Image (cartoon, rainbow, N blue to C red; front, side):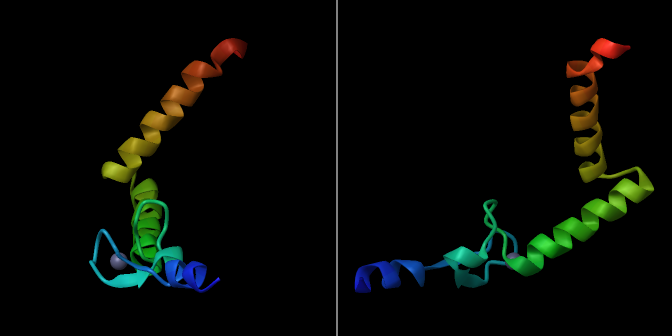
Length: 73
Ligand SMILES: [Zn+2]
């Protein structure tokens, strides 16, 4: 039981800011809540402006999804 608790409080560094957080706090990409939130805000901003790496990635995903599901056209 004690071992499980110790494992749960194990800390990991955020990939972006390098701060240590309990493992459970980090996203699956290794980002802390602050950085994950900042990333999301950036992504939304780029989608609005229609430019930037997030927008391009999103566009590629949309294109790929359209190609895959384009049977009705
Ligand atoms: Zn961070």
